[in-house]
Image (tube, rainbow, N blue to C red; front, side, top):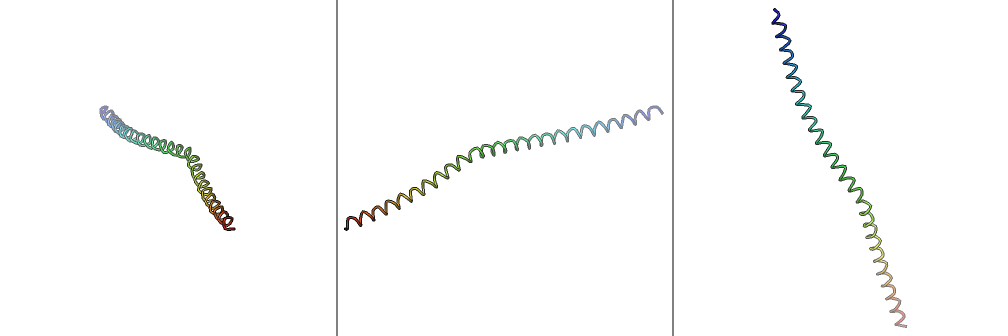
Length: 92
């Protein structure tokens, strides 16, 4: 009779141990997935930070290109009008 409770407790302990081993494996897997997700998010944040740092340079380049384009058009318009005025003055 004394063997039966001992065996029952031993069987229960074995079940608990196998459950704990299974849970430990699941936790390890979840931790690995979480670690990968954190690494991916960190890489993404670093890319966003680099892009954010580059953005003012891109905006500056765009603004310069727009200003230079407009200045070029104004210069062409001034040259065209000056040619017209010179032609009128020559014709007098």
